[in-house]
Image (cartoon, rainbow, N blue to C red; front, side, top):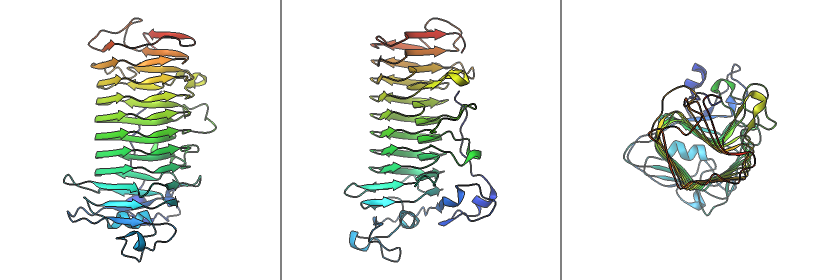
Amino acid sequence: MPKELSLFLLTAVILCTFIATGCDSDDDEVGEDEINWITGNVSIAYTDYYVSVSSGSDDAPGTSETAAFATIAHALETVHPGGTVFILPGTYHECIGLSNTGNSGATITIESHDTGANLNGSGQKPFSFYFENCTNIAVRDLHIENYTDFGIGGSSCSGLAFTDLTVTGNGHVVQLIDWELEGYGIHIDDSDSITIENNDVSENGPNPRVYPGQVLGTGINTFNISNAVIIDNDSYDNNDGGILVEDSRNVLVEDNEIWGNDLDATEDGWWDGGIWIDGGWDITLRDNYIHDNLGPGIEISDEDLQNPTGYVLENNNCEQNYYGIFIWNFGTNDWPDDSIISRSGNDFTDNNRQDVWIIDWF
């Protein structure tokens, strides 16, 4: 089942190391000493910086391709809102936590320069970027792979945008157990004004799966987000779900293609969904193509009895899944009232076990 997944800093040890140094305490959990924590400067001055893993130096000025920094972390220590960190082609084995960075006046952008920037966790580091209490951060056009807990994520942020990312093969062996993670490609919680757009998200989640204990994963995982768009993403071949929107409000999920995800958690007594909406209110699913998933194409539930309203289903196509749509815990074995779920133009035909499955409780 989905559960509340708020990310917090683990101990005072980490709190005292919110600088650009790793966490070296002997008491740290496995994986924590891989994280490079940075607290940002909120000055309105800005400059663009360049990073090259092959030819850069952190003693260089970083202001051109030929005088680039060597590490992304050093660039993020230096850049101010309104500036861009351009990452030149190459493979970067970095794990960066950014805290209390940015302001409402300008955006810090992190992006590939001439494409080809690859962040690789080497099967040891927990994530590429994690943003906490940050404002107006945009990350785009990066390849993120082989991080143990999640590819990229954020918590308690405003104005966070992840676009044009390839996020693959992450979350296979979760290390930060106290963070209550299950293994994700993209993870955002407790945040407002969120954009997740045009990302390719695949092969994320624990591998092998962990039974019992409901430890699975999701390609794009969100909890308690608001005023958000999740549009034009491909989420496929994940263990487990494609997209989860839990306890959130005013969210548009549109034009996504979701396929090939293994949603079967029946050993633990439940199913995941290609797109799973649980709780919250005012959530629109529109023009999504959800096919060939091992489980329900769309799942809509009210697990915690929040009495949600304002779900809208428009022009979604679910085919060749085990189930087209699975709805549960709305007190009915038929479609809930239109004030709860309004629907038009959807196609839930040609699924392998059942097209529409609605039960009072699951």
